[in-house]
Amino acid sequence: MKVIIRNTAFVLLSFVITYYIADYFSQKYFIKTNFNGCVNCHDEMTGFEESHSPEIVGCNACHLGNPNTTNKDFAHKGMILIPGNLTDASKTCGVTACHPGIPERVNSSLMNTMSGVISVNQFTFKELEKPEGHFNVKDLTKSNADNHNRNLCASCHLGNEKTELGPINELSRGGGCNACHLNYSNEAIKQLNSYVNSKFKSQNSKKENLSGSVFPKVHPQLNLKINNNHCFGCHSRSGRISTNYEGWFETLKSWEEVKENKEYRLLMDGRVFQKTKDDVHHKAGMECIDCHVSMEIMGDGNIYHHMEEATKVQCIDCHSKETNSVSYTELDFESKKIVDLRNLKKENAEYLVTEKNNIPLINTFVNRRNEKYLLTKNSNKKLSLNQPKSICIQGKSHQRLSCSSCHTEWVSHCAGCHTEYDPNLEGYDLLDNKDIVGSWNETPSDFYFDYPVLGIRKEKSGKEVIDTFIPGMVLTIDKFKNPQKKIFKRLFAPTFSHTINKSGRSCKSCHNNPLALGYGKGKLEYSKNGKWIFTPQFENHIEDNLPKDAWIGFMKTRNETSTTRTYTRPFTVEDQKRILLVGACLTCHDENSSVMKKSLTDFKDVLSRVTDNCILPSY
Image 1 (cartoon, rainbow, N blue to C red):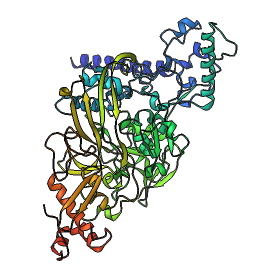
Image 2: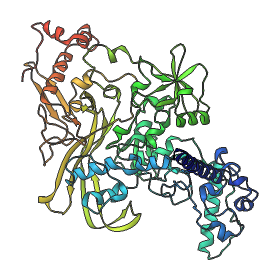
Image 3: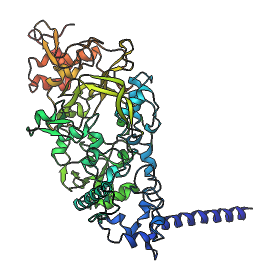
Image 4: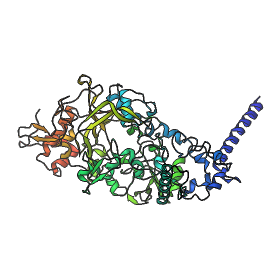
């Protein structure tokens, strides 16, 4: 009996191994057979990245079709003009011999599902009790919240198909694998434009052929040369990460007002941005992919509520006194493959790994002298990775602060938005990609850029961290053109604005700043009788009597849910009192004085030594 079981298992195993070997070779090496119809007709095509050249993978590995015929109709049957969209990636990019498993990861990632966007939107429209849950953009219904997403948001997911030939640009949305990996050379763009223009003229003149209409002979590349332009289309919206990073702030100005001013920029979608300070990493020549890793961008196979849960990289992974690293031989398969493709294997050096999930940062290194450095992935520029300054880590006073709470230079503030459904407005369904009648329309009010608002983020361990926030949804929703049925929300959202500066913010910019505390812009003054007085810059909103840009009232708290996350909150009254107590000291004592430096290590001792000249707050 044991012999029969063993022999049966051996036969089954042999079949499985034979199947996968045959599958591998049929997918990867069909081009090396004696005949290939694709190459016979398109033998002049050049421009391929080596790993995707016809000599290595053939043409139908990506485009499908039938390579075993010279008949055009038969050869093109079932062919995919633009491979890489998630609808067909499992048949092309994700086959066994190429990149197995990755399409499935991308499909379940937040970059594709938009789950966090959907849950927050439904929560705001009172269609969901809490701003969390697992959703997928492809399953959007026709509810008010989901239609709002369909009209204004739903194009920014990787599953949105790329349907037109050409490079990725500011207007690009989605495209699956193409969104990050598609690159056109200048010659490829030139030939494509010439072909498209001649084809357009041919169609307009009702001729089947036009003299000079030449099919492009330079193929675009699919490679690892991912630059910031690939990210810009989607990430210049909402949190405006791409524009923030480069130092551009969105305005409500028209291009006609400012087109002669070099401090302004017109995007392809018509929005106007003003130049301001860019992120310190951008100044150093770093691109998005120099920090962010494949397990974030393409997903790791897990399902998350919000993007900050899926993000692996933190400041401390590069800027820390401690060193957590792995050798080349300890790298996982995916990391090792990318290291080899990018030629990032270094002698006598190991790779830093993230604190979360121990993911190798394959372009960061620590050598035998414990010197840490980073190589930019596209330009190969070497940058030192500095340890945090002592002020960041000394004493107990700032142990709850995130790095970004001090080092974020600015964020975009939107002080209000009116969102209205107009049944007669011509719009567009971004999910179904079709024109519609009846659409949601947003009208923003005041935009400005300044320091972020600070609040509390609670980690899974229970630790509370002071972090950065922006107005996420301060808006009035008019669903029925009926004042009695309007929805008003004042929700702030956690953010990592990507506007980091090296020096950090001053003490007063937190402890004496009404915007940082959540009151909104205005004047915060400390009187001689120990009273704080706040005068807001913006008028109070008619719906809740708070200043338009505020998160909370002065020396008040909010009991109802006031953020887009269940694990974040504004400062309580007790939090505010502690912050303003230090602010009172700063009205007289310079932040670099011995008194204030002592307060970082032992504030209680400083308070025990106050003189009669010190006026402490009274409430």
